[in-house]
Length: 453
Image 1 (spheres, rainbow, N blue to C red):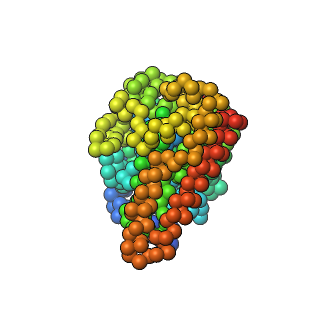
Image 2: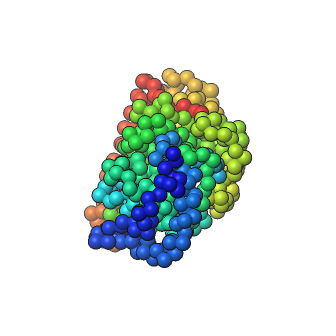
Image 3: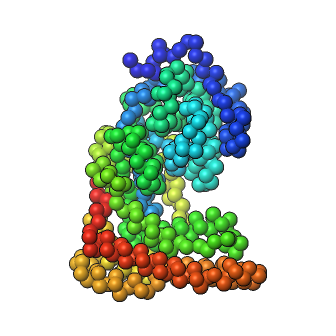
């Protein structure tokens, strides 16, 4: 019997009696969640019956098939998810809305499943990831009353289950995705749709917890031309480091380091999570722009679902997913965005990337000069170039001097301002050490990188 059939709804379990007991908590995020929930109580009562009817389509407890999407820099993980949005055999949350599920669980282990579901949207919003994390407003919003009504419907069906069963970590991921799907009015073709978990950030701890919860879980990583990835991810690191400092680098207490952070993260992310090689595949960003149908047919086959025409439409909650970059906006495939970009890399920097990441270029099918196909010349090229600061390092040094050190000296913060030469030397030595380490890992020992789908 499908547990979501009407006969499974306990007549003595009033859906409106959903227990929410964090009103005494001092955590502002929980208090904000409680206010949001309380404001919708009057509206959601009339919505619960519709959510219960929709819930008949789902066998939530048996939804064990889950695939996580991760990125390699800015490589189209959101774009890939948007092509899966309209498929009737899948459920997912748009953009960053599902990304904090495991973080939230770890921060609030004492909350019941129902309290977690009520509080989660507010917690994600508190991450300040921008409109991509907002459940109840923006281009892909779901109604707050509809979401809370979906939680009430789930409680009406599953609220009498054993506390141990409800308290399992995997239950939160399952119920959160179904609550979102019910709120969005999503009907599925079968009772056990595949869950697309938008992990995005390739966090090793999250991946291990995910596989503990879903032993048959799998990963699909998006990758991109390494030259373009380094160029784009540096811009992203600059933006992030400015944002966390309130866009006032002259008042910051720490110097920025986007160059070393760009390199450190990208060389860590081009392989599968530990022990996950057999269940992991990669998808090229460029193929989502220049060979969309063939690419999505491969994705559908790997996911084990039927190909649907909706997989050629970039949407979230049925609304076109608009991507903006450099003042230009578009929806879906954009062949111009698949061109190699290297604004932040000099010619010598590109040689360094070709040499160090030769395996990435070769195995992922990205063009590079023929000489870099041979390991020994690559080792000599890296050995000669690691002594020269890359352009991203010079841009970082300019930010440190112009935007931080000089304003600090001008304002009398001599200690902070005079530390700039030491910081720049430290960052240069760190970059050299990382380059040498990656040379040993990649060109001498060999490294297993992500395998294309």
